[in-house]
Length: 359
Image (cartoon, rainbow, N blue to C red):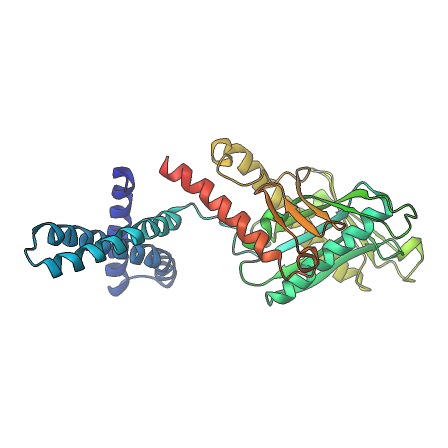
């Protein structure tokens, strides 16, 4: 392992020992104890990996000496067998330690706001937006996540102009953050008599869900309008002014919520989405500032980047960032095979970041 990395590992081992000593002592306040305990628990698996690696390195040295110096041919052969086995294991142990050293995305443990919008392609794009929204809904159910619909704007023909949902559970943002971007579909619409394939698109945005403490919103900067909620095709579905439109004047962001019959609930949901959009803007700005680090990331997170194509006639889904094609489109859109794509993207992202750590 590289000398620079060895020094960093030694620092982590020393820090872990210092934390253990501090936590077994007295005089810590509740807040200090909680803070140090969190750091200790985060370091523990890393130090465990370092210990395993170092034991393997020591064993490698001992076995190499034994294989060279032993006069017992049987013992020498045994040592050489174990040496070969250990040499095969060692790169994996080193990779495990290096992966543990990769910078953590502080938002990975957050819940997420999912936003789906129909793009170019008219009604066919709206139908595809509906397919994607239901795909994520089923995927969330398979992972045991809570999927709460925040807003649905339907076309009346089974499609969605736009829709949003709050998804909560373990590692939600970590799993879904690479889904942001343009998703393209190629298929023959039911109304197409000649059987010609149409191409349309929908845009996905996955935002880390922000808490009130993350983003302070000044009520003076908001314009809040209330109106009657409407259903597909503009038909009225409510006789009271329960729908809410919130405009954040400094940024021009607009959030509309009309899913609930209560104006109060719609306002609360709209603020939740607005807070997450503002937080995501800050996050995007931070990422853009770290231009060098961005080279180690898969995709830019740019909403205009085409990331995936769903080709129904060929039964395939292709993710363009990792050149992965699966011929199981039905299982992908049912949520069952979505993990195969997400796992490949996460692995590619980690590999790119490892290259930066090693370089």
